[in-house]
Image 1 (cartoon, one colour):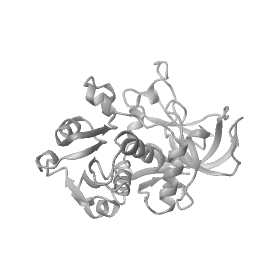
Image 2 (image 1 turned 180 degrees about the vertical axis):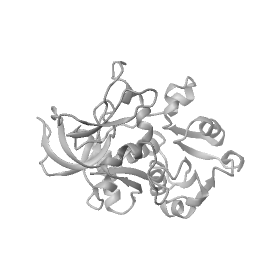
Image 3 (image 1 turned 90 degrees about the vertical axis):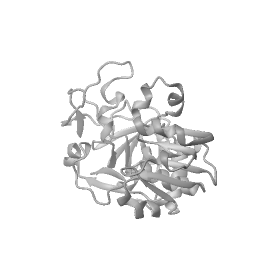
Length: 306
């Protein structure tokens, strides 16, 4: 099958088109014919892309760990009918979905929301599970609480706004003011223009801060937490922080079939809305990972569509 693979360049791998074997589903896994896959440009710099679980250099990794497609085969103990339309994610150290086929554990996928196209569904799994696990599992966001979401126009941010609003929170986000109308429609009560305003200088405090930016933005955010406030960050550089409170705030999303099923229901009830910023053809994958494709709305996620 055709697949985009990372080359051996460092520190930023490039992508090369190759021919590799169709994966064979292991026990508890399914083989999926990929219809669309989500693109996260920073993935090329992630540790599992460049290293094996044992720490050795990894070669020829196939990126793209969230996808939508059709089941064509199932391994032992994976009870699912071939032909089922599914979406989900697979392990960071496994070969991903920038290919014609990928394999994934049955525990990491579920039925594709009937209301979504494959392209829309492929934009959802990592972002939606990240938001669910961050705002609900870790922060336990409650109705009436105030939440600050950094990066509200990004692939994770647009779902964070919607899920926080669904939880009954007062939602404030940092983003470009040019996206004001769209972000308010998605659930933001207030939009702080990060280019012209310092969020910590507005006299506001928050019960929860959901950070997808890291660095200086994260450092400035501790001061706006109310007593008992909770910080959640997904910024990759936070993983190597020695500061204990930052280490406690950081997490990496995990596959969860049950949560993904609940998220599907929210899309099918129109409670959540997918936001696809750009669609790349299979041939355009390298450009998409370099963020060189023309954008439409300027918010949401880029996907590859086969």
